[in-house]
Image (tube, rainbow, N blue to C red; front, side, top):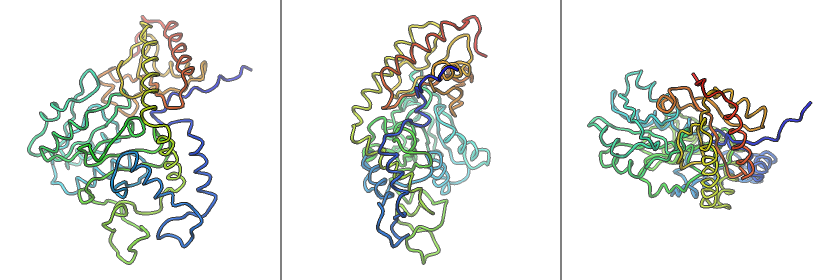
Length: 390
């Protein structure tokens, strides 16, 4: 029986792998001693991983004070809390903006609220470069517009939005701005003290090199979002009402301590390398893959100038799922196929068929990129271009 080829992991936009050794060690260490948490134990033998993670994320995203970083389960959880919490203070039928680039973590909560009659929703189109121009946003604002929620980086096209330009326009019109940073935090420099955003959601298991079940959000003005979860915080326990202080205002219940230990270690690893080095390597490898794949006429690349290490492609004459199956079984290459939880993007770029997505991380090697390019070109050469994907 033939041995399986070694794994080449190119699905980092979903979850990064491998993790830095320090992340694995931090999880193990967090479980080796009793949990330490202020207000929840008399012990002092363990690390305060919650504070370590909060300070690490605050440093990476330029947040001050760190208490304005709130921890949740993931970016989807954060976006639900932010959207529901903001709209709790709005009249029924208020106008909300989002874009066709957005992930279902944004689209589904907003569509559900629209179905309930609580909001009126406008979905903005994107340009050929995979961005929504600030002028497009301004043209869609009405006197009833109260909120815009959009992705910072597309998980399909790898494009990065001009959140500074969009945010300035929104704030000029008094519109609240929530940004989904699931794909950008850890990939590009982000200064939340300088960006005109009101709230910024992130996740731990992608480019921050943490593990599943961690994420959070930055909130500029805590009073702008109503808490929608209530419970124990370990502070002010005599009160029967949720504390107003940050971050306890939004952090009810027991934290995912091993997850936050991993998150702190992952962010510290990024800081030890430097975002400039991470970005330079990602740009170089992404450009190499696109240059190689463009040379094969049967391959369509949906964005040839991504700002993130994400490449979405199709091979004429073979279905995307079959491409993924061949890559995995014959070459040991783990990619992702389908709609990537962003259906409106695919309606525009491929008629809703979906794509094969390659996504890189700091641990992706140049040799793995060369192998992946060769494998995909071999599959394309053996495809029948007269047969179009349905």
